[in-house]
Length: 591
Image (tube, rainbow, N blue to C red; front, side, top):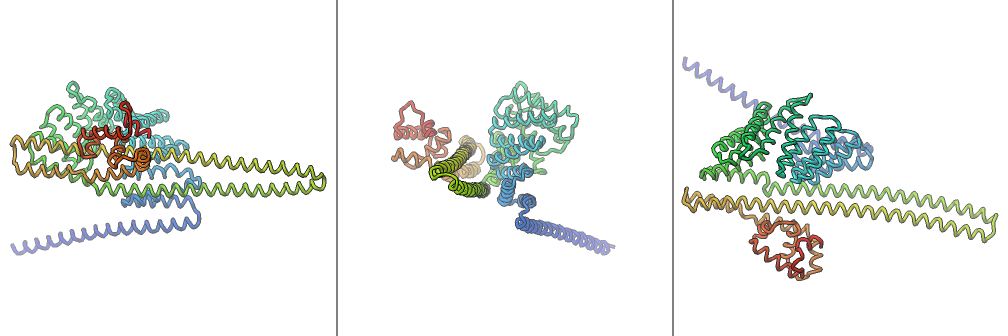
């Protein structure tokens, strides 16, 4: 009997393993087939695109370019996807295929948003909004305006963000869409909250909740939004007098997020509770809610929320003097932060942005070439008309020679020459005016581009400074704990060494200086012409001052003390022969 049982067991295990193995092979086969299918489909689309180009079939060209852009985007090839979308826009512009322009501009904007090129994305989202308005697509126009507001929100330009959210709210009221009105009020409330205007934020959040609750076309999304907006409203009551109201609103947020399985919003609600408990010194409760957030993230990962959770664990365990656990989360935080914002990722994003800039330049060159060809054709037609005019005049002169005297002939000749000269001069004046207008537009675009790059460089400088100060604070706290003799000295030393390794920002400073030198090249050349005795360090300092950076931020970027920066500014002012009452920053900006 035992032998039979053993034999049956072996057969059963063999069947299970064989079935599992076959299932794995089948899964691998499906993955391979999917890759082959996508590759084949992309290849077929490129062939169809080539045929449509031969046949000058512009609308199908745009359709194939859109499909190829989507396929490349799905496979993570953002540069190629951008290139294809820009080519589609160029064709739509050249051949006046206006009905396609809104969707194409949205595609380019979305691709730029993926690589966090928010300023460039705003340009194309505004074009999308323009074409939606022209085509009377109110719902799409609302989404465009809200999208622009979100892009400015991501750039932390909350005033600009609020302007577009208010435009969206006005449009939502015009088309009587209560769902859109509720969303816009919530978005406006968030912009007021970020600039600490809590009274105004409360008004808009409360309006949003009422609109979501009373919507006659209410959906599960509206119900979920009641909870999410309640969580936003709770942040307005993070003070000791209204904390009970904040807890109640956050519990509402958690209830709705659980009910509708919105896990990223559920994590956000838990993290708000953590912040609230930490504000009032309830460290145990804060830790328990942070663990709840981590449990959700284990099942439904979200990198940005995970960073916030790790950061909370570091603060919580540092407070409770659990150094080993704090060290563990510091390491996790560093690894995840590097995977999201480390040098390799930044290099990849920069490369993608560079490809986009190159494609954009090529696209603009092609447009300029098309305009130039059009102008040449107009000039050619004018010359042809001029030839016909001359022929008529000569015929008239021939008839006049038979009828009139030599004196009358001479008079007609002078009059005709004056007429021709006046027409030619008029054409020349029109061409000169057109050229001047194009130059003016080009200068405006260059200035906007320079302002955007200056702002980007300033944000980069502040990011370096804040990152350095955060790591410096952790280092200071560890040194204090070590000085009072608590914990294992070797563990403190190991942890301090790891934190010290994060303080080395030489590569980031070199990268920042390189970018600053490129951006301020023309300014530096002009400054050297006026003051030839200035050194490279002086020029670099001038560039940082132009970016409106504080002495503290400049000190971090120069790796010196604030006192040294003040002395450097004083010496620089002397070299530039500026009087004491003259502001150095204003002088450099005006220059």
